[in-house]
Image (cartoon, rainbow, N blue to C red; front, top):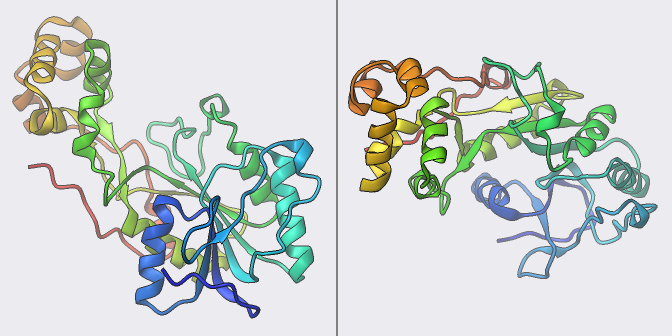
Amino acid sequence: MNSQKISTEIPILILGLGWTGHFLVELLSQLHIGYAATTRHQTSGTIQWELPQDNNKCTQVDVSNLPRAQTVLITFPVLSQVCMTALINSYESKYGGKTQWVLLSSTRPFSGNPSDRHGPIDSSKDTSGRMNGEYVILKRGGTVLHLSGLWGAQRQPRNWVPRFATEQAIRGKLLARQLHLIHGKDVARAILSIHQQFDKAIGERWIATDGGCSDWIQLFLAWGSEEQIKTARDLVNNDSVCRQTLGDGSLEDIVARGGVMSRLDSRDFWNTFQLHPNEFLQVL
């Protein structure tokens, strides 16, 4: 990685390199676009930096070792309005002028069915408190990119299936079959497009998915254990709510009938920025 500390302005500063940052760095390197990235612990090619999350420690945020950038991407939740405000104030005070702020978030609070970027948003689903930072970003003219299930590299949906081993967990997936995904490569392209067309993003929330959704029943059939599949078949045959929701027939029949509709609508993002997702999960 070629993250650099330089005195002149760079295009993108990534606060919190993380999983998403690695996909972005790969894209920026391919396109020869300058960047810098931070990590909490010193690693080769990154800047050691961490944002406090305690209001009492956020009266002034130290940005002395952060380079000037046109766009600052925050990849982690900021749980405090005070800390987010202090970060923006300290950074923009150091370099003067306005910065293009981009904050990554989750689609969890979007409660409509279907739901697009305009809501509704159920704040009670924000169990982490990350919406506190989002409010500040939007008020200050930044943008929030809400990402659906992230996959790619070491994050593979087939490895998620074993997590749902109990009857209750499997039943939940039979009744809520949609799995919305977006690949890290498409996330990187989305972030770069926001950077390049920031005038379209000012003060806005966006939803980014791959435009469709996967079917949890299909995932269980492809990648589940014998015990998981047996439990799912028993539920389809004997649980009255499952039978009413899914209809008659085997698991295979239910998958073949389709009917799994996307709950999250991300068309506004892709259309606005004149992009389309390129990476899609193949369930074999």
